Length: 242
Image (cartoon, rainbow, N blue to C red):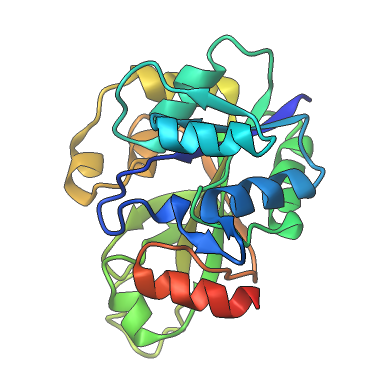
């Protein structure tokens, strides 16, 4: 299988504009993420895909590979789909540009899911982390996922799912980490299918796959890392980097 990584990168993030160009230990966040992804040695190629000349120039001028988006896109999956449409690849892994602590172990698990999928039942795979903190479980910015008995996603929500009505039943909550691995055809299908009600309601692009019957294999990881969504997250990342 030919496996590449794409790092979708927007400059104008809603909660923290310009976050990918912030300094993290002497390099920008986007370069830290790019170098961490390349450093796993898991991929045939790694690209940053962006609509920003600032980010494009930052990556290219520092020896990285970047692709400029041709069209306007609402989400990272659309940006990646446009970029890979004419590439000869089998699997593309979407690493978020604001995750400079991307680790090899978690990405290896995603790749192994496809290598072991001889019947091709998996359209895409993604990561999840077991969470126990009540505040995090109830936080709408923490996306939760529930699973079937074979660890395929049943639903993603900003609400705490499942609702713990019967307290005598033990429940585990999982937070979805926005790292995806796609079969090429799955992401091209996503690109060509219109948004439906659930995705529009929750503002979660992964729901489009479920609404159209795609199967998402969830892989548990113990690596939390730091997603840089706010200035406070950046300060946490700086301390962790030190």
